[in-house]
Image (cartoon, rainbow, N blue to C red):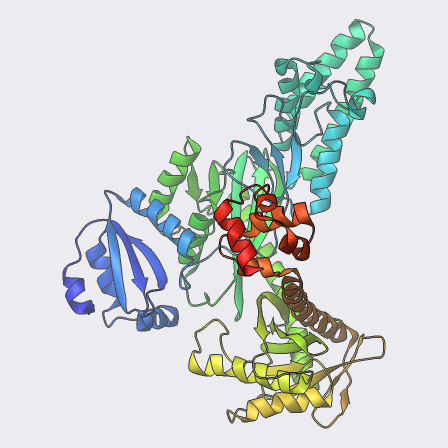
Length: 594
């Protein structure tokens, strides 16, 4: 048995990474330390701790540690373990949405320029993210119009060029019509454009335009003039500040009672090329410098867009170790700065102001919904967690249920669950509803920290009074007091109203009606998708599935040759052996079973 006090005595006074585990052997926290002995012992001493750390320590059943040579190695190992195991008490990178990037696949002989939402370390160069997808698409369209680069995803040799070549939009590298050097000159110019180095591009283009004019190549000069004007227009749109830094990320943080928002601005060549924001819950008792340290480590772990400088309000934890780590990845010096005055401080303040606005806007929408629900449903507290259920079957066969969750006014598809009905036979939706909710409530009562989480504040039944009563019957088995309301549909199967247990239809705003409609549609889709999957699986099942030696591939080959199980039944052993993979023994087994 693991004795924490005894194990604490064995800790070495060396740098390393420690891993905290609960009684189920699940990793709940990963941290690094210059001295494992000093750092890990702090968690188990009677000193002032935040509520978050107190809760984490109360769950620790045992711990382990890995000794390394220095703090930089500990940092890398910590980041990788957090990424792999996603411990619940670490700061985990979870973005509100995925923003687009512009990707240039530099490993190709003739690189293309594409829009992507996935950033990987594949040797490509990425620009962004673009908070406005329309702006990213506009930039891609501009590049395609002004530069004659390939637009096909995969470069293959062709017998004739595509339409883009004929309309003067591509130099046709697939036909060998352009040298690699000439083609790459365009790519280098596009990279300068995306990095904000437009002054350099414009100077070069002006020289080329003047040279073309001297040679009386007026058509070429006019084309270069148009490109200069277009680049100047794009450049103007990007300018946000006269900040003198060329390659920086600026990070701001804002807190509320419910969550935290981190906003990150991307400035390249004195121009903001994009921004992102991230939301975190249950971190409000952590210091800003601790949150930012965790965020920076997670954000830049697999991000090829590491800047030369990162600016934050105050100096973060592990600053020197993180700088050393990022500098090693980038191949040149990376600094984390906390400006105290001037334009740099104003830019950090701008990031903080935007993070505050982003947080307020998100919470305003949620709080209005939650307050309206509390008032309309006449509840004692805000309904932060609402669950709904739907039953799906055809004539009582393949009966299943879907469950969906609305958390703090947002529908959380990742918390959806599916059930097979086990105790009800035939078509009896209310009994099915009672079974499913009984099972669901049992999960949380027996294991509050399990996959279903805490009990809901409210349950919305998909239907009217019959479903409400079935739901209440399940709740009463456990002597719980969870309010139940029905989501009623009209004759056209559209959400019409919310109903209470006395059949009263509740008056709600259009915004709330739209949310409840989406909620009902989501649970309906969850249930019916699962029902169709089981039904299709049953339909495609055949007698061949129960024969030893017949897998999916051999089954497909047999049906491909003979067309049906009945014809396979009539085939001789020799005919069966004509099918790829069917040996004499397998053929005999087929005949014996069929």
